Amino acid sequence: MQVKYNKLWLGELEAEKLAQEYGTPLYVYEEDVIKRRYADLVESIPYEKLRIHYACKANSNVHILELLRREGANIEAVSRGEVLLAFQAGFEPHQIIYTCSNITTEELRFLIENKITVNVDSFTQLRKYGALSPDSSLSIRINQGIGSGPHRHVVTGGPESKFGIYFSELEQVKRTAKRYHLRIIGVHQHIGSDVLDEAILIEAVKALLRTASQLEDLEFVDFGGGFGVPYHADEKPLNMGKLGQELARLFSDFGQEYGKQLTMILEPGRYLVAEAGTLLATVTDIKKTPHKTFFGIDSGFNHLARPVMYGAYHPILNASRVRGKEQVVSIAGNLCESGDLFARDRAITQCKEGDILAILNAGAYGFSMSSNYNSRPRPAEVLVCGSQSRIIRERERDALSPVSAVLHRS
Image 1: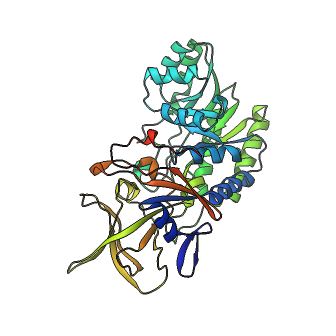
Image 2: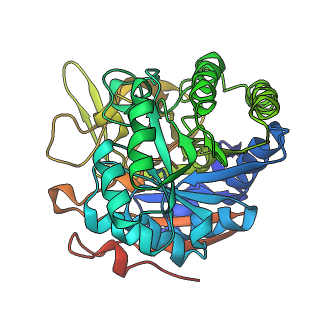
Image 3: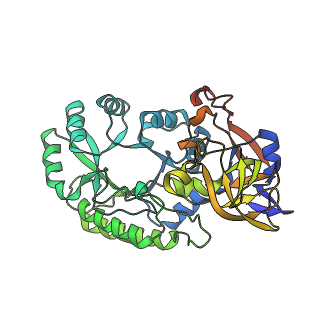
């Protein structure tokens, strides 16, 4: 993203022209940003046995998955559908790790039949797995009692979390696994999403390694993801260099004590794709009341749910006129809901009807959380590489168009 001639450019293409070519609302992803984030992550962690599993719930477009596969990533999936998308993108079963959450016996059987490594989430799942696949191996998701995140809905560890087997029950885990002749080859945790404090992540790593030391046959330790990106201008980015050095040191030291160097698995999602994505929308209405001014746009929280669901902040620019006289406005979507606001009382360059607004850092949990609420169709998705752009998901013609039927393959 850059500003030239007072207009927003994505890659080497003007945002307004992308909007004209493909229509709005429109998700645009910058390929170079995804590649750079992946390279930054890998290069920041000087540990030889490192494996990155992209948490594809952040953005499950098959073209994004293919791009990350070519860069060297693996996949972390949380549903049968995500596994099938990973297969479609060219991933092999050994490149996929699956994290359970209250899944059916049928879905567990699907994972076993497809030879997908599973992070079992509960004693119920552990017993079912043992009955379906005795004398096999699996990984255990542990709740270490540590959670973090900017909103309670994105905290995935700690006393209030639904995820994982509590660390105090490890001995019972071992006894249950032994009953079914199961070999525990991995241990997993995830403390939350959008974490920008390296100290919390390091604390969680140390706690998981203490648990790992009590398991004899491990091949990997999976620290999960949660690596955040700054959304507010005053937020500091995660110091990945500092975090990576400490991860490598802790893991190397642990390997010496454990007797072998284990594979380190990380599951970044947001970190790889959030900053690459921009949601473009057209200003369709400007309404002034005695109290407020509203810029109405042709999108809604059915396309980007994070503001209404988490109170999340996204930077918003007038892509048609980035700099200029500003006014304080609320930016409203087109859904019949009072909560359909992308921003409240936000300073933005003055707009006129037909201007293009750019909602930034929308590459993670944007389209993947979208819906047909109010029976409105979902937008198209476009991938930009330098001066080239290509459609990677066609716009739905109406709310009845199934997403699976409109995947556009190059």
